[in-house]
Length: 135
Image (cartoon, rainbow, N blue to C red):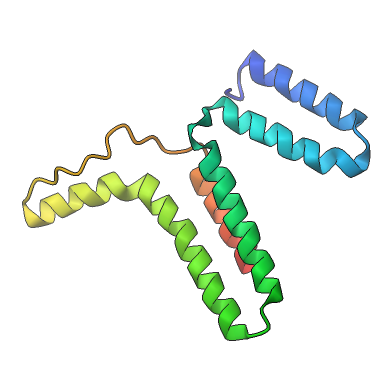
């Protein structure tokens, strides 16, 4: 669903109207649900990836709150950020990295990542998650 389509306009109007009707204590759940529906409209293929990254970020942040050792908190922060950035690098730069390695070594890399589509807004969500972890 693209922003400049009628389907998005209808979706947005319905989402806002329901948001206005829903009691305030349930509005955050409605926003989460409508966000998931919007993301899934682009394709369900990467919805579980984004939900997994969300749970990883939330779980790491909750665990950081429980840790008393600053060193352990910092270690967990680095691990979580590396995991998030690793996913971003895989989806955005794996083809470029393989092509560059092929040029450097003058070898033909037969590793195929053909048909790899970049998940919708992967960079935005990754950097938002990193920001959440750091804060």
